[in-house]
Length: 201
Image (cartoon, rainbow, N blue to C red; front, side, top):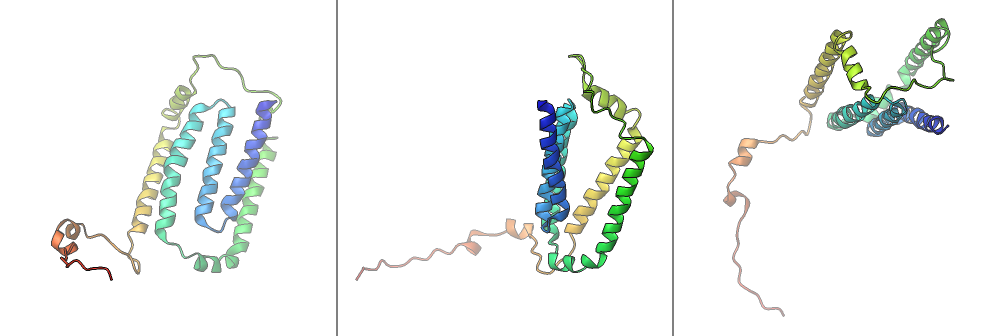
């Protein structure tokens, strides 16, 4: 009973945070809503006794990917006013795409006769020496080795693209001149002035 209540609480927060990702106008708020999505998803993984997936979700996505995403969002210096001008013009395309995705999901569920999960039965209890990390690694590096390597290459290309976008020339961009900073002398920065003491009137 307690597990079900916690699931509904976390699921409600997850749905609200997911709506915040697509509704928020500020990209930083949208990224923080996505962080909340990952944290609540990790809590649901913990309820399913998948501790490794929950820890990886928090450490990798929240700790690394989302921090990188926030830095990219802040460094890109996106002009939000210009971005919103073309939003209403292509809104119909977004709604059409969302409707197509919803129809596909409903079609898959309908063709399979449901989600294929019996909600009335809980998860089977595992022995004390069972390790879901070992089972996941065994499947990941044998059956899904090539998709795993392909996902790693996609992430690498995304990181390189993010760095290339931040290195583009922009108006008013200030760059550091490391050689000039190292070669600076005290006389160029500080000037000591000797003055006579004055009496207070």
